Figure (cartoon, rainbow, N blue to C red):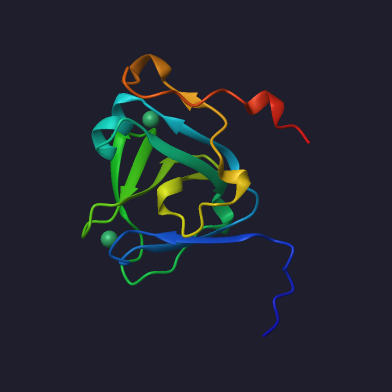
Length: 141
Ligand SMILES: [Zn+2]
Ligand SMILES: [Zn+2]
């Protein structure tokens, strides 16, 4: 069966143990890192990295189906992780048309469109790591 949508980008990814696998399509939206307290606590590091994709293109294609969701802001935002290996995979704002994907969950991370263009919650950032510069205004093309 031929793919008649060859012009649509298809991205895959998943968790460390491969229990949770996903596919998203389209142009990556606003890759950025975030050093908010939720990202630090849940990620186990000084920041997490995020990129958005259209929700309509999201498919959970692994044996584990959807990740386990945890409401970081009940009724507003939830974060998805693998219940087996603990990998962080996604974040979703209820009602949004975009799914936030952890950059680290993607299979291919070398695409220049995935280079973070900004850092959120700079005030919460650790002082011992350089911050990602805000380049979002220089990326118009
Ligand atoms: Zn896993
Ligand atoms: Zn954050």
